[in-house]
Image (cartoon, rainbow, N blue to C red; front, side, top):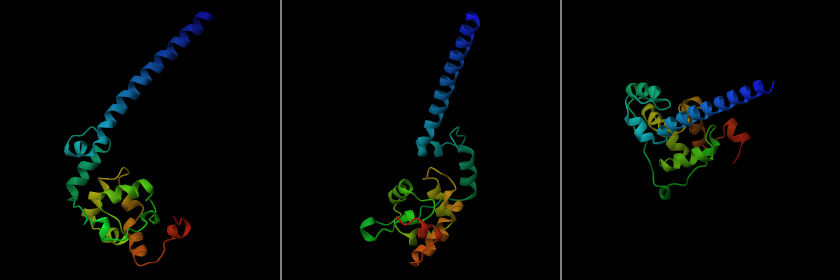
Length: 150
């Protein structure tokens, strides 16, 4: 009975070690994605979402939206847009996006460019940021902004 218990414990330890090694390798491979420039410069990237990026880049030419200097505008609270939290608002600000009007004026190329700089791809379309920004830029409120005033 003791021999069976020892064998089971050894098998569990081996499984644990294999899991740690696989987890380490996967984590290390995904860390390559943290350097977005490196990941996006590769055609055959093994990085996360590498294939999706290739398809997107070929179908839509990416174009940086017009960035403004923060001192030139009064920044809007972009968190009033559903899908934009503090981290994404900070990322947008780093890209020079501060107002609802800027987002409302984006075209497909601008969306593709900004999307490549965000962690969650496709969020702009999925959460309908442009439509929300058009409403908010007019001084109106969306259902989300009514419920979650920040």
